[in-house]
Length: 383
Image 1 (cartoon, one colour):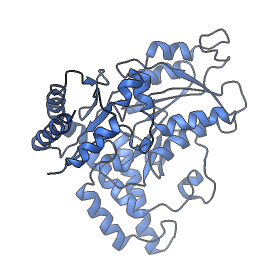
Image 2 (cartoon, one colour):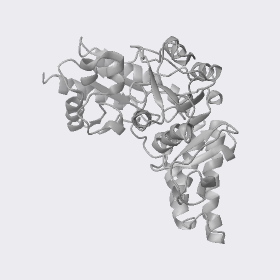
Image 3 (cartoon, helix red, strand yellow):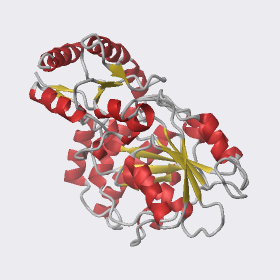
Image 4 (cartoon, one colour):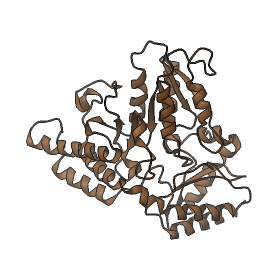
Protein backbone atom coordinates (compact mmCIF):
# COMPACT_ATOMS: atom_id res chain seq x y z
CA UNK A 1 0.00 0.00 0.00
CA UNK A 2 1.44 3.37 -1.05
CA UNK A 3 0.53 6.42 1.03
CA UNK A 4 0.83 9.96 -0.32
CA UNK A 5 1.48 12.51 2.44
CA UNK A 6 3.00 15.32 0.39
CA UNK A 7 -0.03 17.39 -0.60
CA UNK A 8 1.78 20.65 0.09
CA UNK A 9 4.27 19.80 -2.66
CA UNK A 10 1.44 19.12 -5.09
CA UNK A 11 -2.11 17.84 -4.70
CA UNK A 12 -3.37 14.78 -6.59
CA UNK A 13 -5.22 15.94 -9.72
CA UNK A 14 -8.97 16.34 -9.50
CA UNK A 15 -10.90 14.14 -11.91
CA UNK A 16 -13.08 17.08 -12.96
CA UNK A 17 -9.93 19.04 -13.78
CA UNK A 18 -8.49 16.19 -15.86
CA UNK A 19 -11.80 15.78 -17.70
CA UNK A 20 -11.99 19.50 -18.48
CA UNK A 21 -8.44 19.42 -19.85
CA UNK A 22 -9.13 16.36 -22.02
CA UNK A 23 -12.13 18.14 -23.51
CA UNK A 24 -10.09 21.31 -24.10
CA UNK A 25 -7.34 19.30 -25.79
CA UNK A 26 -9.91 18.12 -28.33
CA UNK A 27 -11.92 21.32 -28.78
CA UNK A 28 -9.87 24.33 -27.59
CA UNK A 29 -6.29 23.73 -28.69
CA UNK A 30 -6.00 26.87 -30.81
CA UNK A 31 -4.23 30.12 -29.93
CA UNK A 32 -6.60 32.09 -27.69
CA UNK A 33 -5.36 35.36 -29.18
CA UNK A 34 -6.68 34.40 -32.63
CA UNK A 35 -10.00 35.97 -33.63
CA UNK A 36 -11.37 33.08 -35.67
CA UNK A 37 -13.76 30.43 -34.34
CA UNK A 38 -11.02 28.07 -33.21
CA UNK A 39 -9.30 30.91 -31.35
CA UNK A 40 -12.56 31.99 -29.74
CA UNK A 41 -13.14 28.46 -28.43
CA UNK A 42 -9.70 28.55 -26.82
CA UNK A 43 -10.30 32.07 -25.50
CA UNK A 44 -13.46 30.88 -23.77
CA UNK A 45 -11.35 28.48 -21.65
CA UNK A 46 -8.96 31.30 -20.73
CA UNK A 47 -11.76 33.61 -19.64
CA UNK A 48 -13.48 30.74 -17.84
CA UNK A 49 -10.37 30.28 -15.72
CA UNK A 50 -10.18 34.00 -15.02
CA UNK A 51 -13.81 34.06 -13.93
CA UNK A 52 -13.41 30.99 -11.69
CA UNK A 53 -10.36 32.48 -9.93
CA UNK A 54 -12.21 35.77 -9.49
CA UNK A 55 -15.13 33.97 -7.90
CA UNK A 56 -12.83 32.03 -5.58
CA UNK A 57 -10.95 35.15 -4.47
CA UNK A 58 -13.80 37.65 -4.42
CA UNK A 59 -12.10 39.74 -7.11
CA UNK A 60 -13.23 41.21 -10.41
CA UNK A 61 -12.14 39.07 -13.40
CA UNK A 62 -10.36 42.16 -14.77
CA UNK A 63 -8.05 41.99 -11.75
CA UNK A 64 -6.98 38.38 -12.35
CA UNK A 65 -3.68 38.06 -14.22
CA UNK A 66 -2.91 34.51 -15.36
CA UNK A 67 0.67 33.33 -14.78
CA UNK A 68 2.70 30.13 -14.96
CA UNK A 69 2.14 29.56 -11.22
CA UNK A 70 2.73 30.94 -7.76
CA UNK A 71 6.45 31.59 -8.27
CA UNK A 72 5.87 33.85 -11.23
CA UNK A 73 2.97 35.58 -9.45
CA UNK A 74 5.20 36.34 -6.43
CA UNK A 75 8.03 37.58 -8.66
CA UNK A 76 5.65 39.80 -10.60
CA UNK A 77 4.03 41.29 -7.50
CA UNK A 78 7.30 42.07 -5.72
CA UNK A 79 9.38 43.29 -8.64
CA UNK A 80 6.47 45.34 -9.93
CA UNK A 81 6.31 47.27 -6.64
CA UNK A 82 9.86 48.56 -7.13
CA UNK A 83 9.98 48.99 -10.89
CA UNK A 84 11.25 52.41 -11.89
CA UNK A 85 11.26 53.80 -8.36
CA UNK A 86 13.99 56.22 -7.33
CA UNK A 87 12.51 57.62 -4.09
CA UNK A 88 13.61 56.75 -0.57
CA UNK A 89 10.69 54.40 0.03
CA UNK A 90 12.39 51.52 -1.80
CA UNK A 91 12.06 49.26 1.23
CA UNK A 92 10.71 45.71 1.26
CA UNK A 93 9.59 44.29 4.61
CA UNK A 94 9.40 40.50 4.86
CA UNK A 95 10.67 37.54 6.94
CA UNK A 96 12.67 34.34 6.64
CA UNK A 97 9.40 32.40 6.91
CA UNK A 98 8.60 33.09 3.27
CA UNK A 99 8.75 30.80 0.25
CA UNK A 100 11.95 30.83 -1.87
CA UNK A 101 10.08 32.67 -4.64
CA UNK A 102 9.82 35.59 -2.20
CA UNK A 103 13.16 35.24 -0.40
CA UNK A 104 15.28 34.98 -3.54
CA UNK A 105 13.53 37.97 -5.14
CA UNK A 106 14.06 40.06 -1.99
CA UNK A 107 17.76 39.18 -1.92
CA UNK A 108 18.10 39.91 -5.65
CA UNK A 109 16.43 43.31 -5.35
CA UNK A 110 18.90 44.23 -2.62
CA UNK A 111 21.89 43.01 -4.64
CA UNK A 112 20.70 45.00 -7.63
CA UNK A 113 20.30 48.13 -5.55
CA UNK A 114 16.60 48.35 -6.33
CA UNK A 115 15.36 47.92 -2.75
CA UNK A 116 16.50 47.57 0.83
CA UNK A 117 15.11 44.59 2.72
CA UNK A 118 14.05 44.73 6.36
CA UNK A 119 13.72 41.25 7.87
CA UNK A 120 11.03 40.83 10.52
CA UNK A 121 11.71 38.42 13.37
CA UNK A 122 9.79 35.12 13.33
CA UNK A 123 8.52 33.60 16.57
CA UNK A 124 9.40 30.06 17.58
CA UNK A 125 5.75 29.02 17.17
CA UNK A 126 5.93 29.85 13.45
CA UNK A 127 4.13 33.19 13.44
CA UNK A 128 5.43 36.54 12.35
CA UNK A 129 6.28 38.81 15.29
CA UNK A 130 3.69 41.56 14.76
CA UNK A 131 5.34 43.87 17.28
CA UNK A 132 8.60 43.60 15.37
CA UNK A 133 6.70 44.19 12.14
CA UNK A 134 5.24 47.37 13.53
CA UNK A 135 8.70 48.52 14.62
CA UNK A 136 10.02 47.74 11.15
CA UNK A 137 7.27 49.82 9.58
CA UNK A 138 7.96 52.86 11.78
CA UNK A 139 9.02 55.82 9.66
CA UNK A 140 11.94 58.13 10.31
CA UNK A 141 15.71 57.74 10.21
CA UNK A 142 15.72 57.27 13.97
CA UNK A 143 13.33 54.31 13.86
CA UNK A 144 14.56 50.83 14.88
CA UNK A 145 14.71 49.68 11.26
CA UNK A 146 16.12 52.95 9.95
CA UNK A 147 13.23 53.33 7.51
CA UNK A 148 13.55 56.66 5.66
CA UNK A 149 10.79 59.29 5.72
CA UNK A 150 7.89 58.12 3.59
CA UNK A 151 7.92 54.60 4.96
CA UNK A 152 8.39 51.25 3.18
CA UNK A 153 6.96 50.36 -0.20
CA UNK A 154 5.85 46.74 0.26
CA UNK A 155 5.19 44.11 2.94
CA UNK A 156 5.00 40.46 1.89
CA UNK A 157 3.50 37.68 4.01
CA UNK A 158 2.34 34.10 3.53
CA UNK A 159 -1.21 33.14 4.33
CA UNK A 160 -0.18 29.55 5.20
CA UNK A 161 3.39 28.35 5.57
CA UNK A 162 4.04 25.36 3.27
CA UNK A 163 6.38 23.62 5.71
CA UNK A 164 4.63 24.02 9.06
CA UNK A 165 1.08 24.87 8.05
CA UNK A 166 1.11 27.86 10.41
CA UNK A 167 -1.53 30.43 9.51
CA UNK A 168 -0.37 34.03 9.54
CA UNK A 169 -2.50 36.98 10.65
CA UNK A 170 -2.83 38.30 7.11
CA UNK A 171 -5.54 40.82 7.93
CA UNK A 172 -3.52 42.37 10.75
CA UNK A 173 -0.33 42.44 8.65
CA UNK A 174 -2.18 44.20 5.84
CA UNK A 175 -3.73 46.73 8.23
CA UNK A 176 -0.30 47.55 9.69
CA UNK A 177 1.18 47.89 6.22
CA UNK A 178 -1.58 50.21 5.04
CA UNK A 179 -1.42 52.27 8.21
CA UNK A 180 2.20 53.04 7.33
CA UNK A 181 1.50 53.67 3.65
CA UNK A 182 2.86 50.37 2.35
CA UNK A 183 1.34 47.84 -0.03
CA UNK A 184 0.72 44.27 1.13
CA UNK A 185 1.33 41.20 -1.05
CA UNK A 186 0.09 37.83 0.20
CA UNK A 187 1.56 34.54 -0.97
CA UNK A 188 -1.70 32.62 -0.67
CA UNK A 189 -0.66 29.55 -2.67
CA UNK A 190 -1.13 27.14 0.26
CA UNK A 191 -4.36 28.77 1.50
CA UNK A 192 -6.82 28.60 -1.39
CA UNK A 193 -9.29 25.77 -0.94
CA UNK A 194 -7.76 24.69 2.37
CA UNK A 195 -8.49 27.36 4.96
CA UNK A 196 -10.85 30.31 5.19
CA UNK A 197 -8.91 33.56 5.27
CA UNK A 198 -9.39 37.29 4.75
CA UNK A 199 -8.48 37.92 1.12
CA UNK A 200 -10.04 41.38 1.06
CA UNK A 201 -7.20 43.09 2.92
CA UNK A 202 -4.40 42.35 0.45
CA UNK A 203 -3.29 44.48 -2.48
CA UNK A 204 -2.17 41.40 -4.39
CA UNK A 205 -2.34 37.63 -3.90
CA UNK A 206 -0.71 34.66 -5.60
CA UNK A 207 -2.32 31.35 -6.56
CA UNK A 208 -1.08 28.07 -8.06
CA UNK A 209 -3.49 25.60 -9.67
CA UNK A 210 -1.62 22.44 -8.72
CA UNK A 211 -1.96 23.14 -4.99
CA UNK A 212 -5.75 23.06 -5.54
CA UNK A 213 -5.75 19.76 -7.50
CA UNK A 214 -5.44 21.49 -10.86
CA UNK A 215 -2.58 21.28 -13.40
CA UNK A 216 0.98 22.45 -12.94
CA UNK A 217 2.27 25.36 -14.97
CA UNK A 218 -0.60 27.78 -14.38
CA UNK A 219 -1.58 30.16 -11.60
CA UNK A 220 -2.61 33.75 -11.09
CA UNK A 221 -1.81 37.08 -9.53
CA UNK A 222 -5.00 38.61 -8.13
CA UNK A 223 -5.00 42.33 -7.34
CA UNK A 224 -7.35 44.84 -5.78
CA UNK A 225 -9.08 47.24 -8.19
CA UNK A 226 -6.74 49.96 -9.37
CA UNK A 227 -3.57 48.23 -8.20
CA UNK A 228 -0.79 48.96 -10.68
CA UNK A 229 1.33 46.09 -12.04
CA UNK A 230 4.49 46.48 -14.11
CA UNK A 231 5.48 43.60 -16.39
CA UNK A 232 8.59 41.58 -15.58
CA UNK A 233 8.68 39.95 -19.02
CA UNK A 234 8.39 41.87 -22.28
CA UNK A 235 6.75 40.65 -25.45
CA UNK A 236 3.23 40.45 -26.81
CA UNK A 237 -0.02 41.97 -25.61
CA UNK A 238 -1.39 38.88 -23.85
CA UNK A 239 -2.85 39.48 -20.38
CA UNK A 240 -3.12 43.21 -21.11
CA UNK A 241 0.61 43.29 -21.86
CA UNK A 242 1.42 42.52 -18.23
CA UNK A 243 2.34 38.88 -18.79
CA UNK A 244 3.30 38.24 -22.42
CA UNK A 245 3.27 34.78 -23.94
CA UNK A 246 0.57 32.49 -25.30
CA UNK A 247 -1.80 31.37 -22.56
CA UNK A 248 -2.53 27.63 -22.52
CA UNK A 249 -6.31 27.09 -22.82
CA UNK A 250 -5.96 23.44 -21.80
CA UNK A 251 -4.30 24.36 -18.51
CA UNK A 252 -6.91 27.11 -18.07
CA UNK A 253 -9.70 24.54 -18.32
CA UNK A 254 -8.06 22.54 -15.54
CA UNK A 255 -7.54 25.64 -13.42
CA UNK A 256 -11.20 26.63 -13.77
CA UNK A 257 -12.40 23.23 -12.54
CA UNK A 258 -9.94 23.26 -9.63
CA UNK A 259 -10.88 26.80 -8.60
CA UNK A 260 -14.58 25.94 -8.57
CA UNK A 261 -13.83 22.88 -6.44
CA UNK A 262 -11.66 24.96 -4.08
CA UNK A 263 -14.55 27.26 -3.17
CA UNK A 264 -15.94 24.55 -0.87
CA UNK A 265 -12.51 23.16 0.05
CA UNK A 266 -12.12 24.60 3.58
CA UNK A 267 -15.09 22.55 4.82
CA UNK A 268 -13.58 19.36 3.41
CA UNK A 269 -10.15 20.13 4.82
CA UNK A 270 -11.66 20.79 8.25
CA UNK A 271 -12.61 17.11 8.29
CA UNK A 272 -8.95 16.18 7.75
CA UNK A 273 -8.06 17.73 11.11
CA UNK A 274 -8.95 14.60 13.09
CA UNK A 275 -6.76 12.45 10.85
CA UNK A 276 -3.87 14.90 11.11
CA UNK A 277 -4.11 15.03 14.89
CA UNK A 278 -4.32 11.24 15.13
CA UNK A 279 -1.23 10.84 12.93
CA UNK A 280 0.66 13.43 14.92
CA UNK A 281 -0.28 11.91 18.28
CA UNK A 282 0.71 8.40 17.27
CA UNK A 283 3.98 9.46 15.67
CA UNK A 284 5.10 11.55 18.65
CA UNK A 285 4.36 8.57 20.89
CA UNK A 286 6.96 6.56 18.95
CA UNK A 287 9.83 8.75 20.12
CA UNK A 288 10.15 10.71 23.35
CA UNK A 289 12.42 13.19 21.60
CA UNK A 290 10.12 13.99 18.67
CA UNK A 291 9.27 17.71 18.53
CA UNK A 292 6.53 19.48 16.62
CA UNK A 293 7.60 22.49 14.60
CA UNK A 294 4.94 25.17 14.47
CA UNK A 295 2.75 25.37 17.57
CA UNK A 296 0.67 28.36 16.45
CA UNK A 297 -2.73 27.76 14.80
CA UNK A 298 -2.16 25.71 11.66
CA UNK A 299 -3.94 24.58 8.55
CA UNK A 300 -5.72 21.30 9.37
CA UNK A 301 -3.74 19.02 7.09
CA UNK A 302 -0.05 19.65 7.93
CA UNK A 303 2.35 18.45 10.60
CA UNK A 304 6.10 19.03 10.79
CA UNK A 305 8.10 16.93 13.24
CA UNK A 306 11.79 16.76 14.13
CA UNK A 307 13.36 13.38 14.91
CA UNK A 308 16.55 13.28 17.03
CA UNK A 309 19.20 11.01 15.56
CA UNK A 310 17.92 11.40 12.02
CA UNK A 311 18.58 13.72 9.13
CA UNK A 312 15.31 14.75 7.54
CA UNK A 313 16.21 13.70 3.96
CA UNK A 314 17.46 10.30 5.20
CA UNK A 315 14.21 9.67 7.06
CA UNK A 316 12.20 10.71 3.99
CA UNK A 317 14.20 8.29 1.84
CA UNK A 318 13.67 5.46 4.32
CA UNK A 319 9.93 6.14 4.42
CA UNK A 320 9.82 6.12 0.63
CA UNK A 321 11.22 2.58 0.65
CA UNK A 322 8.36 1.69 3.00
CA UNK A 323 5.77 3.14 0.62
CA UNK A 324 5.15 6.53 2.27
CA UNK A 325 5.72 9.77 0.37
CA UNK A 326 6.73 12.63 2.67
CA UNK A 327 9.04 15.67 2.51
CA UNK A 328 11.86 17.24 4.48
CA UNK A 329 11.02 20.79 3.37
CA UNK A 330 9.53 22.95 0.67
CA UNK A 331 9.37 21.21 -2.70
CA UNK A 332 11.02 24.26 -4.26
CA UNK A 333 14.08 23.62 -2.07
CA UNK A 334 14.32 19.91 -2.91
CA UNK A 335 17.77 18.71 -3.88
CA UNK A 336 19.61 21.08 -1.57
CA UNK A 337 21.67 19.81 1.36
CA UNK A 338 20.86 22.79 3.58
CA UNK A 339 18.15 22.48 6.23
CA UNK A 340 14.99 24.53 5.76
CA UNK A 341 15.62 28.26 6.15
CA UNK A 342 12.10 28.57 7.58
CA UNK A 343 12.75 26.06 10.34
CA UNK A 344 16.23 27.41 11.01
CA UNK A 345 14.68 30.83 11.64
CA UNK A 346 12.03 29.30 13.90
CA UNK A 347 13.69 26.55 15.92
CA UNK A 348 17.39 26.45 15.04
CA UNK A 349 19.77 24.40 12.93
CA UNK A 350 19.56 21.06 14.76
CA UNK A 351 15.79 20.69 14.70
CA UNK A 352 15.62 22.01 11.15
CA UNK A 353 18.08 19.34 9.99
CA UNK A 354 15.97 16.49 11.42
CA UNK A 355 12.54 17.73 10.30
CA UNK A 356 9.98 15.87 8.19
CA UNK A 357 6.78 17.37 6.84
CA UNK A 358 3.64 15.29 6.40
CA UNK A 359 0.76 16.92 4.53
CA UNK A 360 -2.52 15.25 3.70
CA UNK A 361 -5.69 16.18 1.87
CA UNK A 362 -9.35 15.53 1.25
CA UNK A 363 -8.80 11.99 -0.08
CA UNK A 364 -6.52 10.87 2.78
CA UNK A 365 -8.05 8.03 4.80
CA UNK A 366 -7.71 6.49 8.25
CA UNK A 367 -6.08 3.50 6.55
CA UNK A 368 -3.42 5.84 5.12
CA UNK A 369 -2.69 7.17 8.60
CA UNK A 370 -2.43 3.67 10.06
CA UNK A 371 -0.05 2.55 7.30
CA UNK A 372 2.09 5.67 7.72
CA UNK A 373 2.43 4.98 11.44
CA UNK A 374 3.46 1.38 10.75
CA UNK A 375 6.06 2.59 8.25
CA UNK A 376 7.50 5.00 10.82
CA UNK A 377 7.61 2.19 13.39
CA UNK A 378 9.61 -0.01 11.01
CA UNK A 379 12.04 2.77 10.10
CA UNK A 380 12.58 4.13 13.60
CA UNK A 381 13.20 0.64 14.95
CA UNK A 382 16.42 0.56 12.94
CA UNK A 383 18.10 3.11 15.22
